Image (cartoon, rainbow, N blue to C red; front, side, top):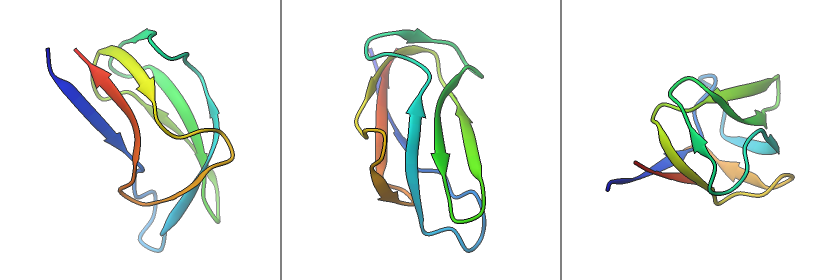
Length: 78
């Protein structure tokens, strides 16, 4: 089994931080590639993030938490 860390995506060139708005999946839920997993708010917009991998997800960041681009958000075990 591989454990993959998902990180805050860079939504725009000027983006430095994002705030987790909500999770669309629960801890331990098995997600599929392309499934929406969480929403993150930037200075300009809210981005709905899709899972790049299939597997059981474990959120690290909590709603309301502001993180820099590249910070860990969740892990997926597949």
